[in-house]
Length: 589
Image (cartoon, rainbow, N blue to C red; front, side, top):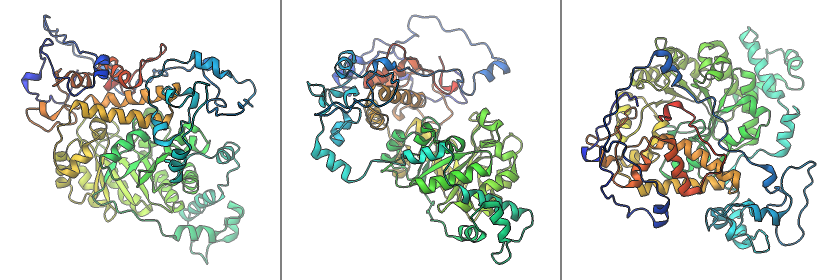
């Protein structure tokens, strides 16, 4: 296990004797039965031989993503109930209208084949009075009658729906159809891009001097008056000062995780990076990334594309069809596929295209446009200080600087001195700093290093310890117990079942994303075990035993142990289940 630094842990907890009895009072009896006792591989064994040094080529293979990993599970359609029957209520049984439907259409047969319920109480039924997964719910004994009907608490359901849906920004069927058939009206965004292109080529742009016929030819019925009005309107304003911002986190920054962070005090949340091309095609999996929970009072969507046409259309589409407070432009994604196509970090190498992207997207939006960018592509060629003033002049309302280059990924410490340089040249617009914030002390050091900083954005720090926002606001370290951490996972489970559903598919989706989160969460070292707190984000501790068996289990770097934790909350994994973390750096075994 390689590391940049080694945490100093109190010696009595390092490689503790397995035979020593540990306190399990904080864990329920039911959880104790499922609890896996972590075996100490150091007892009665000879010291492990020193690891051989890896070549540069071998080291490179261990970095990045596990690209060859497949799905964690597969649904057998022939054994799953058709969606037309899952909400069967008292009265006539509905019929499936789809041709060649592969799902099961016999409710009584399905209930016989259905696996044993995971738990006795359905979270969705308890909070709303109705479970949308009906007969397919894996916690269904509470609302499935002996006659095989899905029961509804009408009074509780009416009270729950009276305040509106808890999740917003669902893709309407008519909008999806228009996007797929390419009939959605993007005349305004197309005209705006052409209008700005004309300005760059030297055409006069004042309202009384612009060639109206030229604009009409380019954009059909959209005239220069429409464009001028669009460009001169005032944007909605957001006060970014001293806000704690949760970074857009691909795969792990989903809606249930953001709800956890909101409960710990984060001020601003942002959805996972969404590809403009997929949004414009009406892809449901991409539109799921823009969903917003009602608890997210300041919420934005992060977009990624390689040209202004896609970005401007997406800006128009999202502001028309969703409720969001800002749009963030991704200039930091280091993924090879995105970079090679000119998106993410790739735009840092195309300054003219980047300026056009920011200018057009800013012009089309009635809400703030924010930008998240790395220092540059290469280690020795920082460009953020050159681009930041241009982004400001093109209409950006906020710039976030991740203090690393694309080449560095996460292998080096963030360069806060360079973030200070960018904050100085980007003034007067606010700048956020991002990188290596794991504790309140890290936060204070960042503010001292960069006095001009409007706030900080936290990514990996929130994944390792989502209560970091509470620590920063209360200005202290929290020695959180294993039972309290386990309660957070229980909440995440409930929020996941509410978001993805409580049927087989929803349960396994919740499990998959929980495992991805656990691949970061295990890195946390309890404050009470540290000799010299606080923990640093790039430090890796030696193998240690916690203050109870649950804490030891949560500290395991093994994916098999993460699966055992998920089984304590979501029942046994299906026979065809397998899991490999997204990032190779999280898969030590």
